[in-house]
Length: 329
Image (spheres, helix red, strand yellow):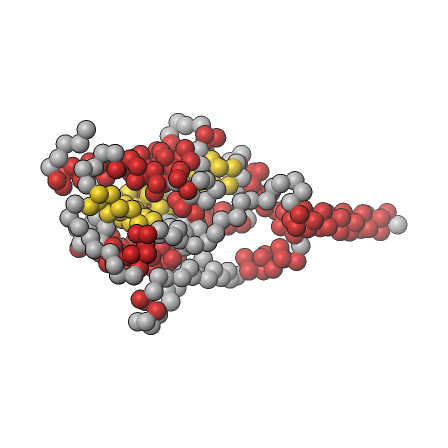
């Protein structure tokens, strides 16, 4: 009899919990719903000119191509405070020439999306600097390149559809059946991760412990794509800046990314054509609360965007001064 009561209470708990979670998801009664970020590249006059073939590069320009996902796109912050706008302001105030920044970053981009964006915009824009904001989870999804016809290659690349396989596919099916399960699982993992504790389940554990190895197919594919980008840049005398974006809610737990950073360092030490910036070094000995958008989300806030822009601007200013033999104030 007691066993039956426990079963009934358990079923009642899940039914009520499922109902509450679904009502909260629909009506956002507690105002917990995250801000919606449009999954598209920012519309700008420069981008339209480049895509329409109306852009003509000039010798008195500093041209910078920015690629990446929502972390550098500026998800959750005002447009004028994001990286590319901050970078423009910092360079415009110093460089004695026009500054053109083509920001084609896009939320939810993967390594393949960023690579496709580079291939499409590089020849059309002819940047002296390519800034790739690399997120450690960019290789989570399938990276198989989709070969397109010549006609479709003349149009801007669309974001690749994300597909999961294996165990993760069945976990997502379970989540789609029970929002309560999704809610409890994701929030428990977020709470623990913020304290520096990672359960041996989920994407974060898989990425930080399993993916960044020499024999992993996705990591090998990523390195091949980065190799091709760096070679194209070298051939055309462009600088390829690979910036490793931190998880800004975990700045105080850099040890969680030890295996990733070790593998990235090994790779860039092998490829000398890449100017590598480990974003963690820009925030050493800082209070992570100052730079995170949310303690349960890895996106940078506007202060972090400014810090990154300042460091990259300093590098570009020095490089342009070296190229033109000019001493900037």
